[in-house]
Amino acid sequence: ATYSAGTPSNTLFVKNLPKDVTEVELLALFARFQAATKEKLIFKLLDGKMKGRAFITFPNEQIASEALSFSHGY
Image (tube, rainbow, N blue to C red; front, side):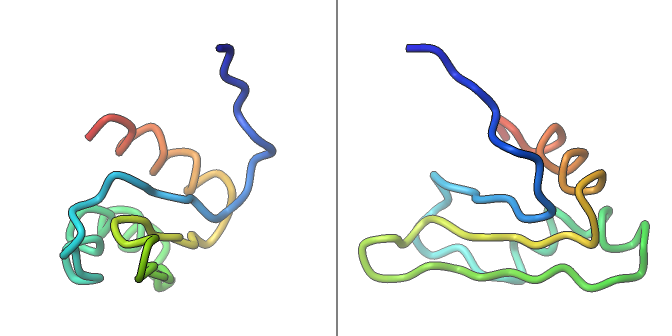
């Protein structure tokens, strides 16, 4: 199978998280990207069958791209 990156966006879809992960834990991981701009990150943790997944919205596409590179495979 071939992989193709999607259209750049300021929102990342993160999966394979522990099912009990919290926004506080996600903020601890991504705090460096919030500190860089002083703008709050927006976390949307999914529940039910989608537990262990989240949407994280960054101030812009550039920061989201940096966060993706930083966290990929973490």
